Length: 429
Image 1 (cartoon, one colour):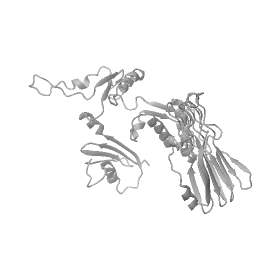
Image 2 (image 1 turned 135 degrees about the vertical axis):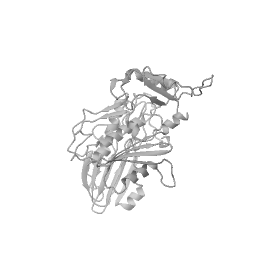
Image 3 (image 1 turned 135 degrees about the horizontal axis):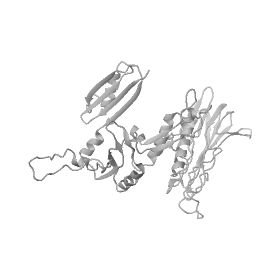
Image 4 (image 1 turned 60 degrees about the horizontal axis):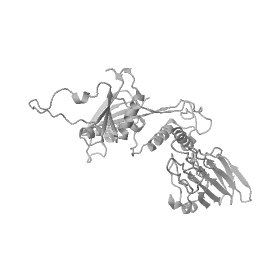
């Protein structure tokens, strides 16, 4: 059975909510948008009121607001560009043809809400039928010119999402019998992250950010698995691969770690999980940073003293893996070396990538170094671990994690003192 659906219109004075119950009945609710003595947020309080006594799930909540409209009407917003169907550039100026004061000889019309107009060769009928699709190629140049001139707001008769950035994965693999499948929500998050990083301004995280993006993923694939597919590695590893693929397609940055370098170990009494940082990828005008969480993770690491206080382990080494960043005019960031000695028998598991294929460089830059996992046994022998692997360890064994370096950007310079040189002093970062 379908769950609740909510549509919320937050206005300057009142907030209106329309809800569809799971049985199909429609409910409405109106409350003041600002009433701090009664509730912190009108939309949240209104939804809760309508849900009172119901145990049914909520499927959809969609909210619109007139905040931007009010800013436009009050001339408090950004400089604005009007985009409108060809032939209607003066529609708002003409309006209803009436003048503000019937007896005035000097007719003063309201100030226009926009400073520039772009007409679009398109036509939509009153019933919503698309009679002529917009010529998006012709629209791109004037929009770019307006942006270059400092105009940041756009309003008009172009439907939201009519200029999509396409993220298509029609050729992705079918869902796997392993746990590297990534739910579509993870794909959404990775795509949104990448496109937010490409915008100079700080964009609040909201559903509207995704409206211009057309994400196409075939069902039953690695990126849209169906039950009973396992998905745990999709969140931590496949998400990193998605960001790397997008940056490669856009040509804006070399790959960073491309992995979260997941490590778990434990026994019947102790369990522990961490992600180990790598080098970030370089870009046009900046080097990668050493030993930093990249892209789809930003988790912190347990302090060494806390780690050793709570668990029967010793942190032997946690250092920059110098020289692991890819060479380039701008060098990739170095990964790390982390060594942990076990004081009790345990089982170690790794979930990591770029142990066989190095993080790519960009624009002639060289790839970062491969990562590596291994166990240095107390008897002097070694056990090499794969990217996704497991091993039993005994007292005195040491787990070694060498994380990948980030890719470099641009052809390496023959002069070692050029912009992309490796800097040994970490204070430079």
